Image 1 (cartoon, rainbow, N blue to C red):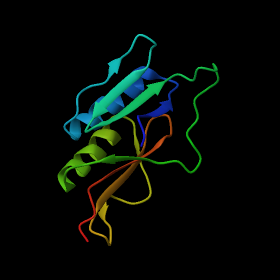
Image 2: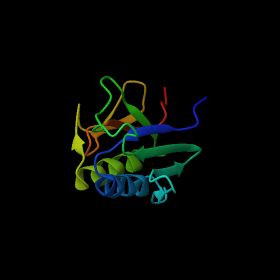
Image 3: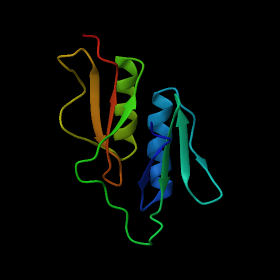
Image 4: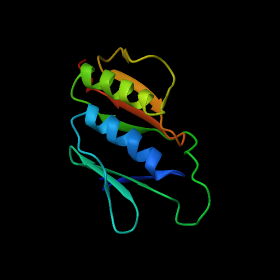
Length: 124
């Protein structure tokens, strides 16, 4: 249904360090800067794009928005969380944990305040 998710950043170098580390923890490749100055990550059939807002205004995180990222295992979720906090992300909501449906999840805010979650598939 979706071709990509685009989020804004006020500091693309800082975002690149954060997202390169978190996607590497999931087995992904570093981001690529396109000709328009957007940072692009492609992994497991999805794309995340990070850009400075085209209207010239500061980037702000979505109120109520969360970007979900698939992880293959509990270990990948933990590695993603550790990589993100090491690169300026903020742990939020709860520590990485198993949910009643059997999925394992972790939540972070990236350095610009965007809310992210990495999770495994539900097992129940």
